[in-house]
Structure formats: structure tokens, C-alpha cells
Image (cartoon, rainbow, N blue to C red; front, side, top):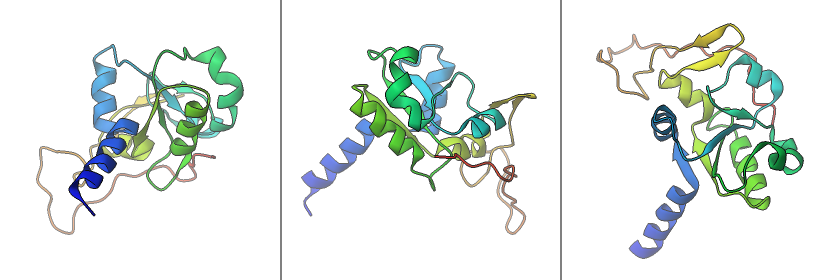
Length: 158
């Protein structure tokens, strides 16, 4: 493998993927330059979603994207997390519909793990940042780090 092939591969990844931290920073700016789309099921959306996101399940993109989203505005898709390819499928559906699109790697799982806010029917909530995935003020202590609790039975439904 040559370095030029590797460079092309990684450049392509950056053209089509973004991460949770970059999305959060862009959303905080007030002018992110994209629409964030949650492609999960209605049950997953209602359980908790990223504030400011638009809910459009993958199966509905082909028929509803035009009524909800301006094709001139780039789209960033997300789903449950890295163990799910729902955001990839949603990104493909948007690309086939003519949208400029990126996939947010990490999904809701890493959004929560970085201590960022989710919107729920009970209001906005946030867990403490997971010291294994996000910078935290306290150092890790061996054998005492406990992952944040993610509610059971929440799946993307894609």
C-alpha cells in the first residue's frame, strides 16, 4: 500500500464522516451549516434525541426528505452508535436523493458518553462524561471507573 492510497482513503473518510465533538461545536455556534437528522425509530427518538435534530427515520427519507429539508443545506445523519449502521443507511438514502451528507460517527451513544445533552419528554438530561471517551477534570482510578448507565431497551429500530 502506498502513502498516497492511504491519504486518499482518509481524506474520503473525512469528506463523508464527522464526529460528535465537531457536531456539538457546530451546533453551539448557532450556525452549524447543516441539518442534523436522527434516523432512528419514533420510540428511540422519544426516549431521547440531540436537541436541534430533525427526526426522519431512514425508511421515510426517500418520501419525506423533500418536504422537511432544503436540498441545498448539507445533512448530518446519526443513529444509535458505532454498533449500528443505521446512520450509514440514512446517509446513503440522502445521497441517493441528491443531498450533500455526512455521517456522525459514534451516534447517540457517544453523544451521551461525552456528557452532552439529550432532549426527552421529561426535559433535557445529560450524564457525566465517560472518562474513557471524553476529557474529564478527574483522573481515572483503576478498577473504579463505571460506565454511564444507558437506559435498557433503547435501540435505533433501523
